[in-house]
Length: 287
Image 1 (spheres, rainbow, N blue to C red):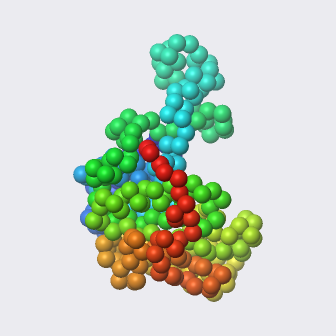
Image 2: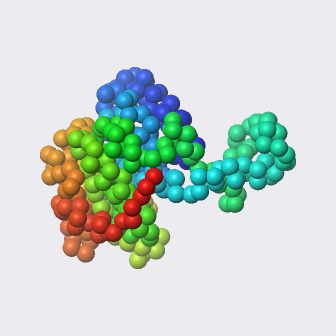
Image 3: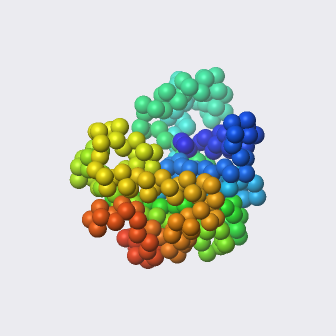
């Protein structure tokens, strides 16, 4: 979910809670699943609604709140006047604001979609986004629900694994709810944009969704086996976030699992997080 849509995210979850019985669903079994910045927005949601998360489990596919907050705190303020100028609204701050309000949101969004120079990030208002997340974890000011979290081995940047790990460590130190950590190693060269890309950012999604055969035809049997092994725990978690994974051999933190190690031809490995590449190489995060 793009930055700035955090209240919309809450409204969507409330809508699901209120309407899911009409579709045969159970409002007491809602799981939020996000990938990349979508996962980061779930972390923000987690911190914003500690007493009423509505959802009973979170799945965070290698996303961290720090991925949304790593830019300058003033980046949104610095971008506002250039946006106003582009829309012929230059002037004093009050004038720029009132002038921009005359434009429909889709018009402004269409400009932002094709402009790399102007960037808006979540504003730390201490309502939806907070100044110090470590302090909130320490004070248990976050939703006490089980989570799945993890990263891929070839993200091309240490930030994804490192920042994801930091949030897991902070949370694990303050909660009794299980955290299920994974590391994805699958090398699906037949569906990768570059055959040597390895387990790159988002590469596991076609296997979780079961759509990998739609890309370049039937894949190898090992790929099908990885896909099934990924789908089963995701579904088990949505059914029972606390015990669903334990029954399949996936123990909570400080244990972890490695999916799809093609070098060893192992679909599922149970390990300790200390054995996950890069786990202990993270820089401290203060926010």
